[in-house]
Length: 167
Image (cartoon, rainbow, N blue to C red; front, side):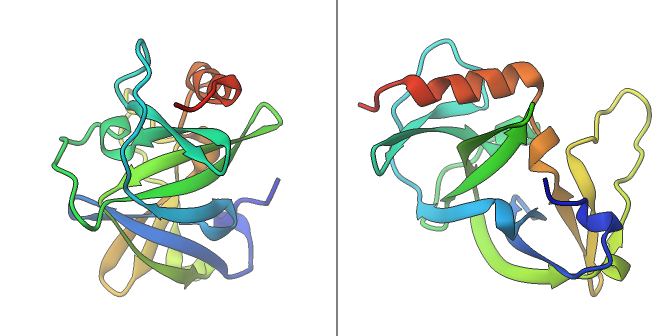
């Protein structure tokens, strides 16, 4: 596992993307590729944020809606809507999933001096999925920790889809 970027003295590259007016980022080493949005095969009895699966070169990849996962309102898909294919680690195992985002922006570099710790927003809100807050000029970028974005149960549901056959 790679060390936490916020505690490292190295510059780290991030892929930035938008959800609404907010800018989010994931470490580039976790990103496998970026796809244009395409129709999904829906799977019944899955969590609301789970939108379906895609066939990616013969492999079943579960796709989640980042807006729904983060409690944001749904919007219509646009020409800029993308699916970011991301690798996550849970319980020592690697899993791959797709994340629907409003648009992909750029790859950017952030050094330790440009990253603030994740905000503590009271005891009832879980912000463990926020690695830190990147600063670029006057703008904040929410740095996601993909390994803690999902609960153990959610990861089990996502990784359990690897055995399914794509339609």
